[in-house]
Length: 97
Image (cartoon, rainbow, N blue to C red; front, top):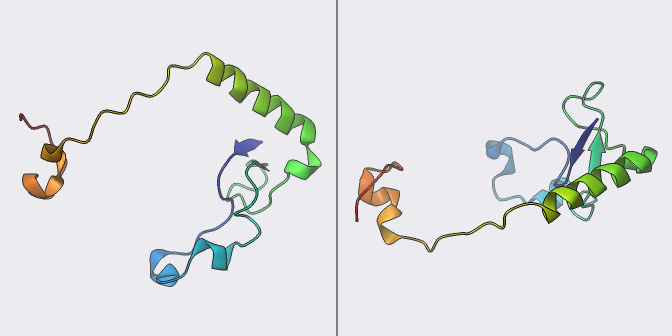
């Protein structure tokens, strides 16, 4: 089983999705925050099964909570204007300010 928190399902290729929102393709999926998939039987994650396995969902949410309690908070640095790829030939690379 695979536990995912995000938007489940198949996403159309960019050339199909131009000008369309995910809400158009997946209106029911955007409101659900926890999803569970059996990736052995459904590797492309089309069938969401959290309602069939609430015990697995509880266990995995408990594990995530325990990991979160012991994790180091993320420290985002301020944006450095020198990091703009347009200043470096359109690519990300080391620079010295």
